[in-house]
Length: 340
Image (cartoon, rainbow, N blue to C red; front, side, top):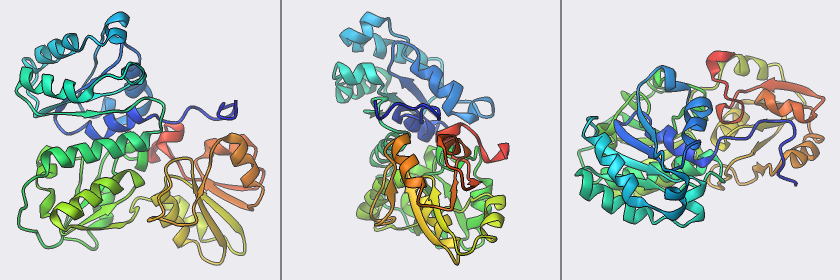
């Protein structure tokens, strides 16, 4: 029972992460479930639901259809939707049921493309991993499927990978673009305030900015295919957090967020001993000594070593008694930076 959450809400799962990446790209996204998983995405993990339209559907299969793997029923429904909605591609997102019965997503991709005439990508999410794994798979699938042509590089143009509300707490790209525009001529946030065309033209970018570990595999793919270099940054730390860290001195500080955000903020804290941690994926290329938090008990034990913790306020419920600075993480608490 070590994984039991007694103080915080469940963290966003991988199917929500995949949907977050695809939300604004003009696709028809089908969550392959018998009913329920789509409600979790739209009701809890997607703050753009009331701001921006997206063709996001539940497969709506009867329990036995889902359990028995009646893929033909899903493809038939998808074809009907495609006849009513002008979409650029389709996507099928996995959930616990297709994971348990070993649904052949590659076969679903072929069947869907033959039936609809549109490109189809699939994400083998299971609902049992965290959101960053779903984002990672969705980004890689997108660039692999659509970023195929080597185009002339546009000097000063950069692409941002990882700009989802789950990572940034933002529903629009303007804050990220404004900050990066101080250094670059043109900034595009893949999947936020941009469409599929920018994915297709990814090779135009002089450099990619990865703002979450979920974007590393896609950035590495683009580097291998087109030679596009990438670096890590998180250009959307809330101003109130930046002001509060200026008052810290001589403290043992733990910064908790997704790994890139934690490292970028950690570098800005001066005169303190600073460690970085995350409940989500840890990648050595971002920070070799970063701490992975396994569960609430693990957090409670590790927190005893620090005077100050900077992280989503939800974690304070676990029992930390020192100074706490709130750094919202939507995938944890469902709060955007606008809620501050």
